[in-house]
Amino acid sequence: MAYIGQTLTEGTRRAYTFTATASQTTFNAVYGVGAVDVYQNGILLQPADYTATTGTTVVLGAAAALDDEITIICHNTFSVADAPTLSGGGTFASSI
Image (cartoon, rainbow, N blue to C red; front, side, top):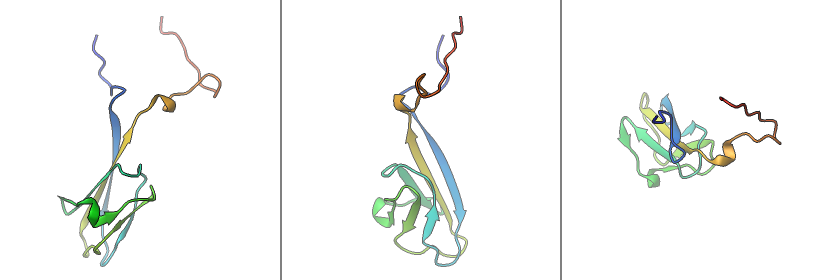
């Protein structure tokens, strides 16, 4: 039977969408450094157009205009280290 969830090689993503105020440059989002895509009014910005080095904020190089739509897509990967362990309080039950 095929597995219908995400495979171990896939990740997850989270989208943050903002409506900018006049001259806004900073937007809050939680992400892995190097794993974001930033869109301004539907146009993908190049990494040189913004700074995303903290894991919590994205700063545009040029201020957004009033009512610009800023979308930040954060890509997160799954790793076996994310799984619970018995020694860490996780529980495992047999499905048999």
